[in-house]
Image (cartoon, rainbow, N blue to C red; front, side, top):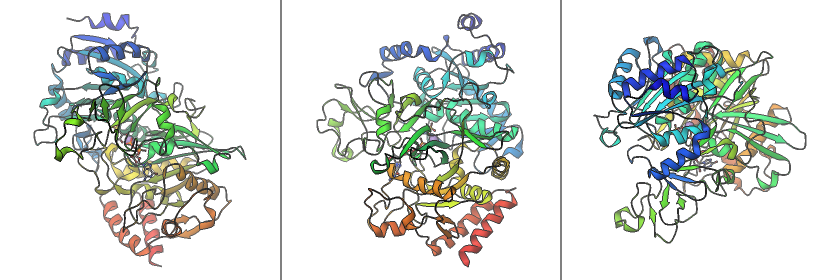
Length: 610
Ligand code: GTP
Ligand code: SPV
Ligand code: MN
């Protein structure tokens, strides 16, 4: 028998409510050992994981990890939001009764950590001192050391974050049990995995994975699902799957902050980390704040503020290279202590590789294993073209490793938000950028974000679907109240942000090439948006927003086919009229949608038919 109190006492864990929680769950999961961790334990835990063969060296101060081959992405089907109030059921939150889910998960977790160590991870999803700090404290329990290594990179981990809570019981209880990954029936009718957020009890119970959003509970279970629920219930803030960046105009000294939602694997990390194109680099500088989550609130002086609650980046590896994202490459350079997951690995040279890292895979196959751990050299003819890395393979690194991280990224006050943008992978219809000045129309635009789904979730890749505000997989309460809460928070701001819809993914219908070069060049669209907000350009009014006039977009140093540019800056009215019918059906699913949203929909529809 472990003396839980002894362990917690010697780890300086003083909060009696936390102790009670650890004792309770240790009694259920029945681990052999308990260990309280903090960020300072990283070097020791890395060494233990290397010694145990759970991770492998990938260069100086770099590490490689592989998850079970049926456990490589979020499972949307197995993810549930539970509460005790049936009125919390929405279209996307997969609502179930709290009592039923707690009983189910307790059953699955009972005795399931036997023979293992239970790590106690006290964390904070906010910079210390943040006005939203009271929603940010949590304690994850996990029986998986790799999960600990990832959590240390993705969240601020230290007992001091939970020892002196104003309300000692106000931490999120986040219990993770890995389960027997080889016998969980992933993706079959007998699937045993359950990823449950009991939102009205601020309790997260995840069973049956050691991967990403299924297992790093501070990140999206707390940082998005729980936080958006808390933000709504308190009326205080929004918790969204948003990137957050700053643009510095060195000529005028002005600074802008833009946040925005793009569905999973649709460009948030790339956008937030971008460097200005070379031709614009003398004047503009882009600062990185966050790539996946932003919490937004309005201060007493009436400004919308935003902050990134995370401490690190869990970024898509595919197509990350010196050209597409040089800052990401720097953030995973030797010495950064980055961890690569499910990429290809060379057991002899300790190199890693993924599709798009270089145009061609390494020519010498000696030592190379694919993401499942199978030697590439032994592949049969049918397997020859299989990807080396899993499409959702990722790198994990801390924010401070990103070379263009903003100097004030950890500032407790957050930053004032000038613009909110939405975008996704849309192969037609959506122009490069359309600006929206009306708040209800901006919120309406977010709610009708339609895009191709990606490999970041199991089994949905390529499907066209609506993904409101890019929150579909993370929605915790019904869509009607969600829209109302959005309007309420944004309208509280005296100085309103401008909205915009962007699309870097429009394609040529004939040969499929991307019409817009994307990546660093995306800054050009954002600069136009800031000029529009400042009244320096007028743009062209269309039924779906204001588009840049062709001569307003700064194209210095950019080669682009004039015909492609024409398509990027025009509206296909017939295609949009058809879209309005789809939107009508999409919105009709949501009871209680505010009248302002329907009014915005009718205004856009009417304008398209004029
Ligand atoms: P999550 O972490 O899953 O929430 O995703 P994310 O939105 O941060 O996605 P990320 O920025 O990692 O982008 C994923 C994929 O989109 C990568 O394969 C990128 O190479 C590709 N991508 C990003 N920006 C662009 C762009 O401007 N143009 C094109 N064509 N592809 C892009
Ligand atoms: C996403 O899927 O949107 C991610 C990665 O950002 S995960 O943390 O796995 O959710
Ligand atoms: Mn994400």
